[in-house]
Length: 313
Image (tube, rainbow, N blue to C red):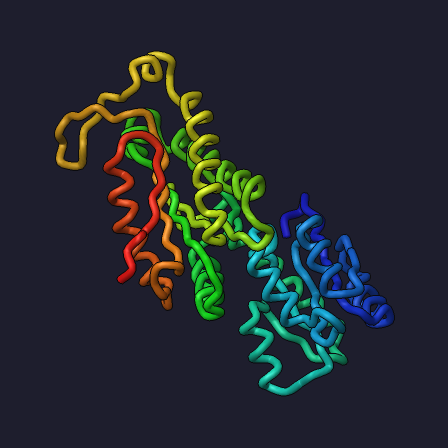
């Protein structure tokens, strides 16, 4: 990790002796250590503390490590935290199950303290590289988005997938530069997270596809509330990013990709919503294709808008 950051490790294990053994193994490193004695407590602490890495025992009562790991991956606050599972089980099927639940690594007890420290260090370095590769929003990117979407599609439970995009973003970038454009993207990311926190559910997920494209995975009953909240917050915030004269005029003089001049309105937000209430959804690519068509329609409307895919086939 960077020299000015002291990494925090969360140890989740129902055995106090094992937690002490792990802490002793990490004593030589300057980590901040926190503990949880159950899967449920581990989830709460992970969301509240946002540790840099989680050491997660598999065999725990009530909520085992597999379930806890899967739920960590489905929460927007913990989806990117590296998880190393610790267990006395050594069978290959258990290891496969652990990795399928979203774990980054797997160690069998008893473990060599030197190996544990080495693996933790490697995961922290990789995590830091991943974050530095996308420093703008720190939201989960495409691999995590696809993993979460695949997982929820597999269960067959009700879900809605929201694709959030900006209109006239290119014209704004051309006029004000990419640094100012990045500030708008950062604002949009915060608006989406704040909106999901305010009116969404605890299991909702927010991801950053790239550029000005974001994804929210939520429940069908919450999608419209979130969309309205995102639009209200974005429309209230976006005028401050424009100069007074552009804001007063209500548009920018710009040119399209073919070099033709046109008037680009003040940026708005377009939200396409796809859910599995009207039709069966089975694959992330299917969801993306449906959303692309809906988003194209939404972008043809005036102002910030949202729309559902109501087609049954």
